Image (cartoon, rainbow, N blue to C red; front, top):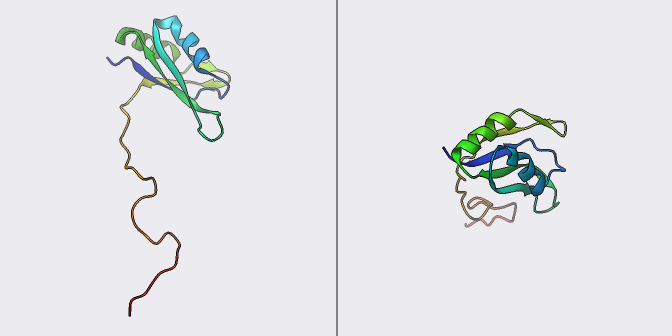
Length: 104
């Protein structure tokens, strides 16, 4: 069992320390990170928690998934591996709304 958990639907006021404190009731928390928006600096409403063992992670899922916190029902499950995205960000080619040349 993997010990890294995805935690979704978090209150936007929750920080890393709050997240760690809530999950520490289920065992050793080796890391807790609320994901923040780069531009605004606000929480994105989800984060990741790494527990000390797979058994502790499973206990945290059972204990925290569906629990209401700050008026929101949390979603807790095993984190999936990060998917690789293509570099660049804009896709490939195209005119990008600019002037088109014609060859005669």
